[in-house]
Image 1 (cartoon, helix red, strand yellow):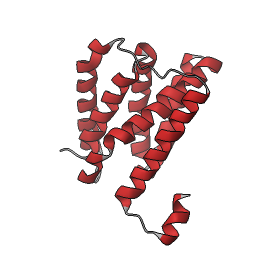
Image 2 (cartoon, one colour):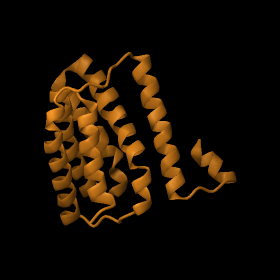
Image 3 (cartoon, one colour):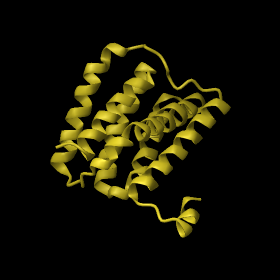
Image 4 (cartoon, helix red, strand yellow):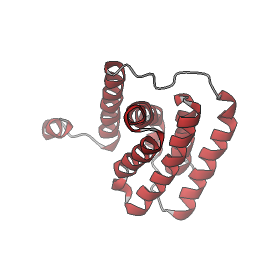
Length: 165
């Protein structure tokens, strides 16, 4: 739909990304309510937050060390909605739906795999890196059932990978 609008009104990268993630956020919330899934709006295991922040920082540094990723400071303003939409979709919706039908192990693998495929636009090596990082984030979510904890990990990771350093 966005491509059709771009015929009449050209969007730059910032607006295209913002609109895409707002649509993703809307769709993830819609299906969460439709399937009556609680993505984990709890305070359980909130004491793991400092470890999550350290994990996000260290993996962000690791990604910067191994890959040359173009820094884009304009993304700083839309990272919160981007990360929250991703967390709702991949952890809150996909991982929970697969967990109900096929169990924990397949839910973790499949959610991380879909996220890796989602990141193929960066290249195959970076997509494998994102798969590995998101596999660990899926494990954290499966253990804690707290979406805010995974949100913070993913936000810090993305900040250090795409904006800072």
